[in-house]
Length: 231
Image 1 (cartoon, rainbow, N blue to C red):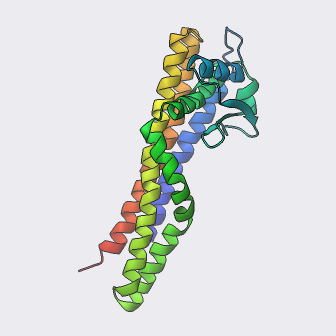
Image 2 (cartoon, helix red, strand yellow):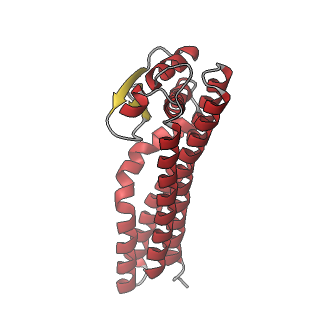
Image 3 (cartoon, rainbow, N blue to C red):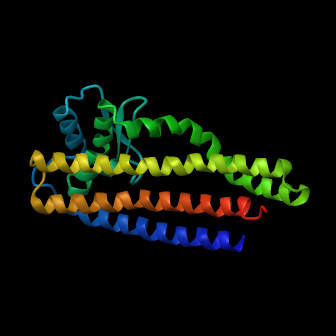
């Protein structure tokens, strides 16, 4: 277990560093006021209209960095700061979330796969590690048998979460690319504002990359514990 704790500690440290850097970037670019004077809500609504999407509502949601697109009720949820503010960071986030709405409207395959995995992962992710640990305990006490298959079931459940993390990567990167392309094509931001928006979205994407690497590392570690001890 010591190796696992070292692994988790290292991943947590990298995740904290990236998350902290992201907050610093957003704080920095939140001070870069948009020359066009548009708020995050107005940016989002214009991008939706420019893409011919009129059945998606832009609403405000509490918290910081809580922005997301909900495909179930077709809402672009912007945190209060993004919804009301008129800066490069708000423009980047608002356009990124609308990027997901555009993906949904255009039936982007990776988004469909991620949405299909959501109900599965919501059920399996919380129990996967406990199944693996429980299976290893049973396997140590009773040989292979039941303990082995319980642990394998846990690994399968963990695999769904890992798959979800990796499918999330192209979804997030594509949404950012759509956002940045639109911001540039429609001259919504100046060159300096664009650089800030681009930098902020790059750091946001890195949080998903770290999460995916962490999920894979955890899966491989437990797989080694289950299969490594077999003859």
